[in-house]
Image 1: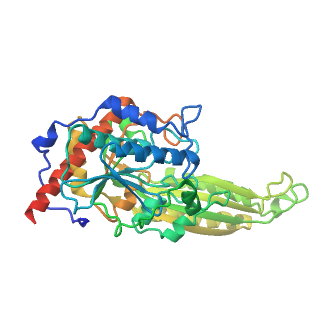
Image 2 (image 1 turned 120 degrees about the horizontal axis):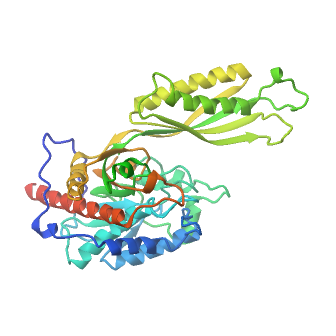
Image 3 (image 1 turned 180 degrees about the horizontal axis):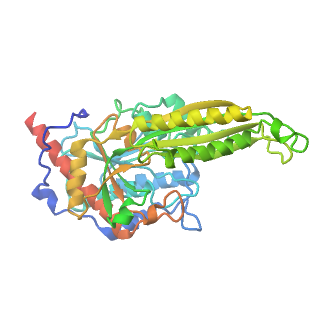
Length: 443
């Protein structure tokens, strides 16, 4: 199958009006939300949330459901060696790779019913519309369930789309371990989803990739817009910060003779927040967060001698992340000098800022305009589309979520907004399919 290269932005974007054949197609809102509820039958929690970690038994069940559901709409399934599932509906020109409609079905341990899941459900709704109307698109269409997007059980996040996109090796990803020592490869084999297809763009290409996802922020909710057009994703870097002090007795060690690693860590947490909120040179839109703290020896009468912190830095531009990192390093070094501490600072994961393909974004923009939506957003969170964008034209659609809450059981999107996300996806996919048809005819 042929895959089109990511082309530079044209001087003027082509017309992306829908053909008459496609313009009468629309999603079924009730069906979209019924499919969403069906997809949450495994791993739901009593507080209305979801706990469906990658490769647990509930994840196996929802994968089985996904395969059975997509078979109803003319798809055959391809499962790769990272457990990514491609449900492919043939097109008129099957020498082309499929247009991917991807997201994920795994969740956080205390997650909600929409993060990732809604994107897969919207892709299934597109299949349902095509099937019900007996439409065969020009290019094949594939709904993709990417494995381990959350990274909650097997860090890092977006792991298996990252393998497909060339960021990680199969060996590295299959060897990732959960806290109990189980490997991702071993768990894929256990649940029957260690597939035979190589996990790479070269071996299993897509033509393009669209993704619907809840915003996970408050911008659309404040603006009272059901969907937004995602221009790109901000820069993200994660760090392990190690602080080495000296353990000593809390009752016999004078305050001026301590090397208290936990005290130093506390000051670093405060300083991290100050750097992105109070300094004159704080980048606009910059964010820095320490949300992981582990200290030892965890004895009430022993001064902490060792602390590890997890630092997350984000900003719209890579240079802004680098500035925040530099300020953190300098501030942390001063704190260590004051308290007799030693510091290690390891940047173990980075996701550079990116802009999505202009033609794909234009497809989304014109589709969203039909719903009265024109708001453009830069994503603050990483998504599988970060890695697909390295290989194929990619774009995203955000759906409004109440109060911007995500990664929490209270995560919620209105039924009409879920349907609007599916409608925007349908229009964008059909526009891109028309664009491919016309482009191929000119060759």
